[in-house]
Image (cartoon, rainbow, N blue to C red):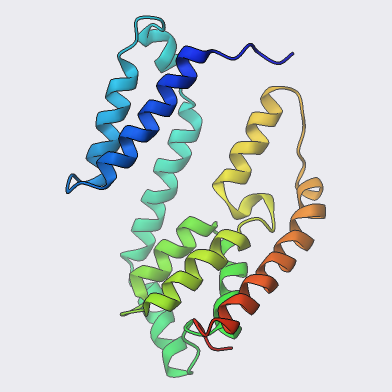
Length: 199
């Protein structure tokens, strides 16, 4: 059953998004602006703080915290710099599509697209703006290949499970693989045709 639209809460959410966009245009750090808006949203007479805090997905927050802690710890070992130095010595820097596309596809679907980008950026000395643009685009698309490729996929699968819909690994892969390969192919062609990245 579809719940009735709460106009008040919808308007409140839209106003919060608008205020956040305005704050992002100021010199205030983004994280501070986001915390200010979050604090304002917590001030509610219609929803008790206990109910609001109870609605937080603590398992998901723990997953995020662990993911970024492990990624940071691994980045501090120096292994990523060593691997990157080896790639540079072999002329395999991910500053062209023939390297960047497969790298983002494999890395995103082994450790996840966000951790892959974090690790890559800790070791990549002075990537060009075009390479960063390609990395952002291709890693986002690559994360759709498998259910483990992106935290967004995992969140959707868990939310679906909570209402009785099971999204299995192979169910996702059946559509995720062809859609990802097609969208990445189109993105690579687009980046190449605009001369943002060489092949």
